[in-house]
Length: 168
Image (cartoon, rainbow, N blue to C red; front, side, top):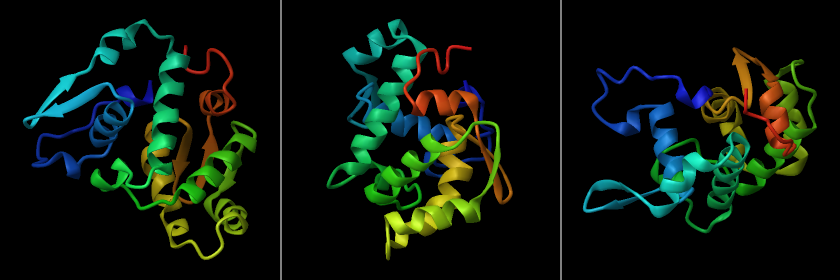
């Protein structure tokens, strides 16, 4: 549902200067829902069956595709110019978020401190606050205000692969 929030793009000259719109395009591409042919975005056969999936299946497909992409040798993530993040940091972030209690407030500093042992010396740790304020918040996994964040009920359910995580 959070991905449905419209973004004001009236003054934007390039998709690379957007937030949610760019994330939607990225997720659709890594999930195999679209192909770009001759500079034109075209739906794939998988896109035609997408509406038949439950919200949980849709979410799982997107998160799995996002994770697979970040684990790949040359992630499409870079093409879309999102904050540089290593798969090791991404995996640790998702693991830590999964272990948090929903609807409780946490500080970004505490999260960063918790992530450090999982990725010592990894420069992409610095991208985590931007990732939380941007793509992770845009998907509805967390809500962020300044230096604090909260795992949403839907985000917790989806990360823990509970049924009906995003059906409301």
